[in-house]
Image 1 (spheres, helix red, strand yellow):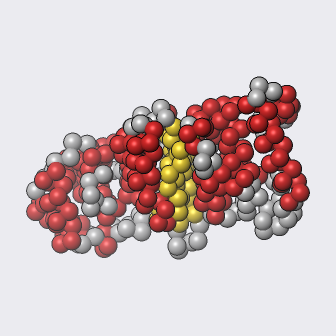
Image 2 (tube, one colour):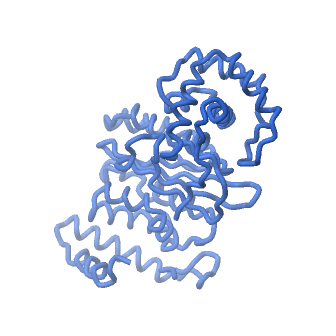
Amino acid sequence: MTKLAGSITELIVLEHGVSGLFTRISDPFWFQSLGCVLGFDWHSSGVTTTTCGAIKEGIKGREEELGLFVAGGKGAASRKTPAEIIAWGEKTGVDAEMLVDASRTSAKVDSAAVQDGYQLYHHVFLFDRASNWAVVQQGMNDSNGFARRYHWLSSSVDDFVNEPHAAICCDQRKTSLNLVAKSSGGTRSASTELSREKPVSLIDELVKLKSLSLPKRHEILVSDISPKRLDRIFLKTYEAQPANFKELLCLPGVGAKTIRALSLIAELAYGAEPSYQDPARFGFAHGGKDGIPYPVDRPLYDQTIDLLERAIHKAKLGQSEELRALRRLEQHFGGC
């Protein structure tokens, strides 16, 4: 899988540039198709982690040649993302500070500003020398056993906290607190304003909220929010005086419960109701490792790798006949 992923990645960069690869990776259907071509289970959450891992490992040692860099991964590897970006920055001169901020903010948005019941455990950050980037991250819902994938593309992000996603995909949808929805703009403004107030006034409002009987809207309920524990966090936001919702969201220690509490107070005090609409939207080439629709055909798999590697090698030598043949196939099948 690593070898084929590396060849496909190199071919796409050769034909469409790194930006073309990012556009495709940010499309959940294309990404899922790539995972299937690599032979992974189409219905498994592992298709995300394995496909990203195969791309990262498949181009290892050729990053500077391709102008493509991949940081992060699953679990502990995801927490190494900033260090990996900085290391590449020191080696290539890419703007690591900006890229680290984009990586951290995208993760914070999907863990605190979008409260849909999915805990992030996978974060992969891809970037090029021009500081263009894409993110593929995934969360798991322990109660229903489903995963949810979040796609980001830098060229489509005008504002990190206002409709920033290229796509969010999941088979299960339900009511969610979506503070990056366009319709949640009032809540974002009110929450930021509230975060600059003295903690005592916010704690008083939370105590009032805990005395009310509110409908269940999300896993983080009013009953889960402890005014005493939030007191020190509100003191931190008061001292920081964040200028906007992004600054508030990215403050250390500010997590889902803090953001939830502020949104509830904003709704109570200002009538700024946030969006509770779930933001999720949205045959095999070599078989699947689970045997569906048929076991992975290893001879065919190896033949595909050989064909791609030969086409790439010849293209680098200025002999593009085989690449032209692949293009004719693509045109014949309509890009399917």
